[in-house]
Image 1 (cartoon, rainbow, N blue to C red):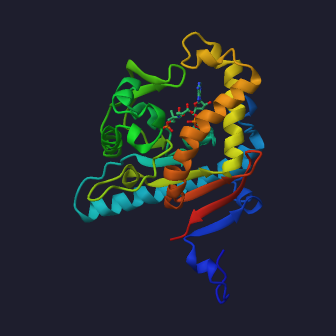
Image 2 (image 1 turned 135 degrees about the horizontal axis):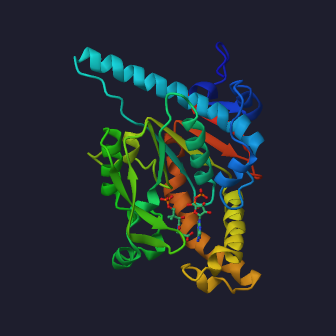
Image 3 (image 1 turned 60 degrees about the vertical axis):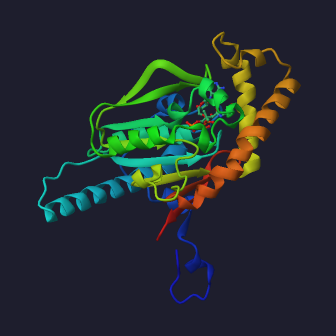
Length: 316
Ligand SMILES: Nc1ncnc2c1ncn2[C@@H]1O[C@H](COP(=O)(O)OP(=O)(O)O)[C@@H](O)[C@H]1O
Ligand SMILES: CC(C)(COP(=O)(O)O)[C@@H](O)C(=O)NCCC(=O)O
């Protein structure tokens, strides 16, 4: 916390206040946690060691903080519409969750969905991932972008912005395309329907990209945003470990796009995952994702064992 009267320049020149894990954990409400070990196992991503203690100490305080922001946003909307003489209809509170491939965004997003649903005023929480707005492999190939999957230009950004704008405006039954990691492509005729929730969580690599000139960005629709952060060398290892796990499981599914990798030796699999990481996901992290970190309202900084060791919250 900034200390008045202290001549330490740095405390005034960063927009974030840094909260150590132990202090953050103390903010947990005293209400009992209603998620148990089997819920956490169901929600965590492949290879993510998330456990009940981590949920209690890190994610319950975060859900309480979000609950405060949500109540405030509703109050502001009520006062504004009453000032304008309009009838107030609540619109969804939109939360963006950003970060690298393999950093564990999906576990964070799924946990928040479950925890926020447990607050009385936000029973309806929906989650979408931006991969549904990737161009299909056929379209990516046509544009010469097959090696750039996950880069900003590999998404139909207009359709994504339109989707979130419609949900944010309170529209019912807004539809998004569906992406399958297994087939590594958009699934034709499959869709996700979002029906005027209390909260919409939008998870994806590039959700914090700044707007182009004279245009709106997806992040302009966010009421709150979270960047899941870790050292690049840790994320690199997590990607490789997950690739090896997938190789022993999902890749042997006949419909897996990566079926041809299922029979590689361990050494070959490590080489392959390194190739994909170094040619696609690492450059995307360095060129596009990391530069958006300071645009987040809150940064969750993970240590090399995946536990969150620091939380940074924007104070201005
Ligand atoms: N090739 C794959 N086959 C099946 N599932 C995958 C594959 N790659 C990633 N996944 C799964 O997709 C989800 C999202 O992964 P990713 O975009 O790397 O985000 P994060 O690890 O930050 O949640 C994870 O649950 C991961 O386990
Ligand atoms: C599908 C993804 C682009 C993530 O999409 P997101 O939902 O974050 O927009 C990513 O997980 C991915 O598959 N990247 C391509 C390179 C690779 O296979 O690792």
